[in-house]
Image (cartoon, rainbow, N blue to C red; front, top):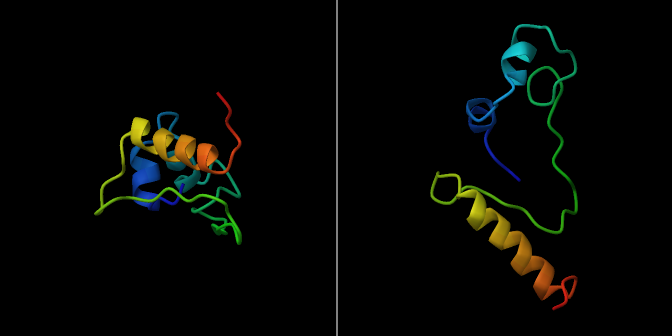
Length: 74
């Protein structure tokens, strides 16, 4: 998934980003440790027109990719 940091913080049910910003968690990706995107990822899920897709739509993208590549069999 390639989502903006603000969205990740907004959807953080455990409050880990808040703890990292308060300095209680060190080495937290995107806060005090850089985010390093994968160099050769097979699939990337992004926002659509500035909106995060619904979980079912994102799952559908993954399933379609796996089917197209022949990883899923009926």
